Image 1 (spheres, helix red, strand yellow):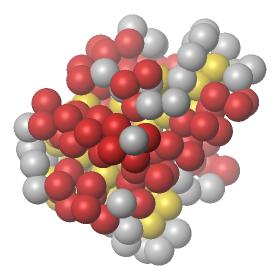
Image 2: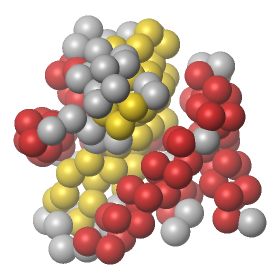
Image 3: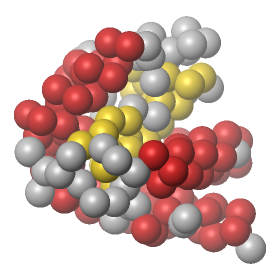
Amino acid sequence: MILTEILVVDAVHYAQSESSKKRLLQRISEQAQNAYGIDSAMVFAALNARESLGTTGVGRGVAIPHARFEELDHVIGLFTRLEKPLDYGSMDHQPVDLIFTLLAPQKEGAEHLKALALVSRTLRNENVCAKLRSNQNEQTIFSILIESNESQAA
């Protein structure tokens, strides 16, 4: 699996700040509707439900919110970079500024796990995270993500 299979440039967003984790998830849900045509209310409810089970803030300023949907036939991704890190309730208690959201089919467990592993591997790379944090242009952010993934695959 490669990132271009799950992420499109229209699903990459740069935001100066969000007032709360809830507002961030709302923004991501709106982004899902705009980029992929998925109902934003349904996405928001699913992401909120997943967060109620435990934080998806994995540490070092990174969160990977994810949810499953009957309506999807493949995994799709959204990426958000915040200018001002947000308290996300992460495991390491650090605020979050890099958020990669995964929306997966209800029945496709293996594909979902492969996508989670791919995103996790990508965002564990300190050089990639530094490049993402130093850019505000959504096309550039998309390119950084894709190029890092291509170099890992090579």
